[in-house]
Image 1 (cartoon, rainbow, N blue to C red):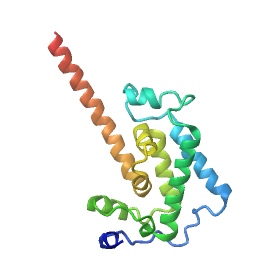
Image 2: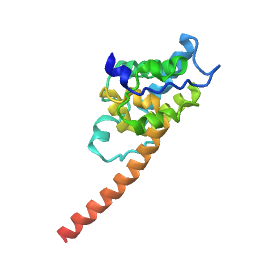
Image 3: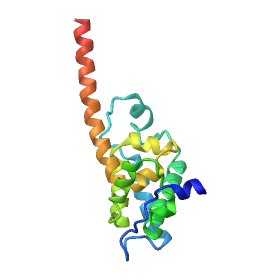
Image 4: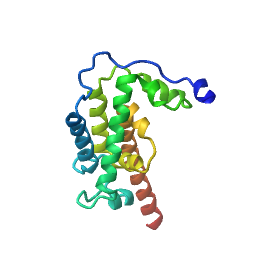
Length: 178
């Protein structure tokens, strides 16, 4: 507990009176459903659709790599973390304090409404299957909830860079072969 107390955990509170925080089980279930549908989405994916991870884990939503109930469990966990942030502030989730740049990005989301944060998370899950895979693997849950917009932007940037690298590698192989 002393080590945790020594960390610089963000203390900012989200906007007061946020009417977008779900108050009923039905409202919470609607958010979970939207997250799960986004995780299963393959329509507007920004990842490379030719990579083995995508092909093996995400390409066919009728045969998901992860069990649907496992995905739903993670969606409920995401909702719980987001609700906690918007009800009690970031200190309630014990956000990791070791990466100061990440903390600053998290602090920049302090004015997000619950709905804004959730919509960013939904977009991220719908468009980036690599992030879904990392989330299902048990890493980055709090990070995705804390800074979904940043994760979405960096994922889109990574996708573009990966395509450029792939073209360069293919050109290099062709030059060596020819």
